[in-house]
Length: 333
Image (tube, rainbow, N blue to C red):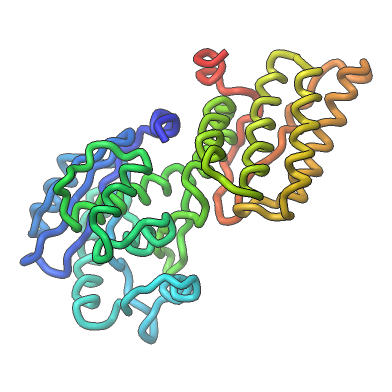
């Protein structure tokens, strides 16, 4: 995921918080795909380290609110409905952890830091990684496979959960995650239930990095099965078509879009949260515009006909880039 690391260079601190100061908490700094980890015990040590690191976001693996009533918050119930296991935040050590998390959040927010709640174990479920108590080695290798560098071979379970927390926080900054509401204005930030490389490509596509999006999807396509293989081929060809639009190569765009329609015809009406039926209609409008340019009925391409991609649950950009991003154009043309 190096292309997106370059686009979003924010520093994120992930904290795998322990229930009390007698136990170690894992801390991770994530910046441009590289991680560095520490283990601390006390709140003072933790806050001092965060102040020194000065991250754009702090992602804490601990509940940061208590239920208004009953045993569970709305976000907890949502996770249980999705088959993700968790302990009620009001019971035993979880209550102690929650109260510590709330105090820490208030202290860090008072210093001007942005803080979100994450759930590393649940995020690992969504990302297809084993939780720490199942297989520590596979969890470490799985995090490395996400493109994270600098993970130590002897990293503890606290450090690996802190790395997961930092990664989820980074996804949140990139608009590649969702927040499940706790009914109190906050909630748990979770990765979207789609492959990270697919989401990377979508966000790059939305930002006008068409070649970079093409590369992300192509990497995922190599190991995909149907209907995902045809779906990814269609997206790759759409990105290529938009690059050709910048060069006014309309015959090439026509050929690419014909392939796109053939690939989309092999897909169901929804893939990875994308409304494929709507995408087919957008591609048809794109094709009609290109035909008008080729036959002389129009002289200028309407960039607003760029097909839109926004999987269910993913927050759209406030302003999507239609034409190709300059850095993508300069580096790849």
